Length: 262
Image (tube, rainbow, N blue to C red; front, side):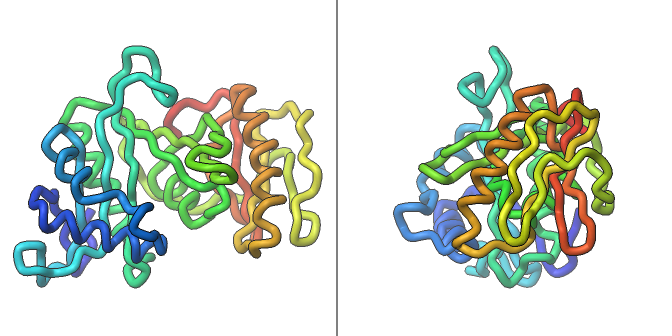
C-alpha cells in the first residue's frame, strides 16, 4: 500500500534511529524515560527486528528529513504471550506524529511490516493496545482484520490494561465498514458510565460497549467494566473480532469459537 506523498523505508542508520525517539515523544507525549531508545532499534535491526519509518516523499533520512511515523517489532519465542515452541513476531511500537493521523500511514506501516515478517518465514504477529482507545480498535479490527483472545490487566503498570491481538499474516487484509451492533449486549452505557456487566450470557455473538470519548473521571469505571466483561468472556472461548458502530456508540463484537483471523 502506498500513501501519496510519503515513503516507507527500513531504518538501518543509527543517526536516523535517533529521529524515531522524537516520533514517539510527539505521538504520545512521552518523557525521556518512556521512549524506546535508538540503541534498541540499532541492536534490533541487526538481530532480526523490523524497524520501519515513514518519511515525506521529497526528503529522507539521508537528507535530514523528519520521520513522521514508525513501526517496530521483533521475533518472539514462547514466553507468557506465545505458544510452546512457536516462533512469531511481536510488534511493540506503531507511532505517528499527530499531524499525519488519518493519512493512511498506520495501515501502510503495518502492511510493510507484514511483508517483511512473511519474508522471514513467520505467519503470526501480535501486539497490544489500550481497549479504551477506539481509534486503534478500528484500525486493528476493521482495517487489518486481527482478533483478540486475551485481556492483560495492569500489563505495563497498574491501571494500564491491554488487549492482546493476533494477526494471521496468511490472510490478505481488506478494510471493511464497521458492522451494525447485532448480538446480545453484555455491557452498555448508563449515562456517561458503564452499567453492570452481564456475565451470564450464552450466545454466539456478544456486544460490549466502549465509549468513543472519555473524561478522566470516567476512565477508571470504564476500564474496570471492560476488564470484567472482556476478561470473563475471552476466558470462555470468545474472541473480539470487530468494533461495531451505531451512531455515536461503539461496541466490541465478541464471537464464540472464532479463529485467529476473520
